[in-house]
Length: 229
Image (cartoon, rainbow, N blue to C red):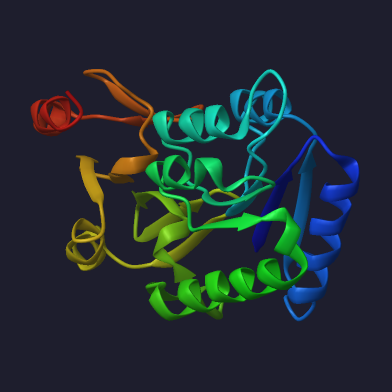
């Protein structure tokens, strides 16, 4: 599922972006769009663990908490979301890219540029996204590695824990560990691997991925402590 967020304090601009995104991605069967009318509202949704967007269209010129503040908060807290700035001034274009923005769109040209940049984003994701092919409950699936938060081994099954669902399939941790280790996952326990950039807090007993706790065994505790020091 592609979850898209739009954060803009101007209702008219937000509605226009919504219409453009909807028209551009009309062929996407599995898509949801979430609206945020202020930077404070968006940050609050992250703090409340209900923010689940893959792509965020973010205005910069907003009162109280502006778009750069939001982007800074997102990156500091390792929130896994791609950002496209949509704003009325080119003044902050270089600062925007400091926060690893995918693109920077000026509102005077939004009707032309936003569909183009949105499709460029979709094409890049499709072309670059690596997947694990699994058979879960008798159905063959391609699971994007980018959506996996952590992996659990339970009896004869592996469980891929994504943001929105858990996908079990028959395999051994030793079979998928080499693939995931090269893509930013680290072992915390005989039965667990986590995506390093999703980790928000570390202790000698556990790592936290948002409000999800994953155990750390004595064997891996020093390695984990050094990695996240």
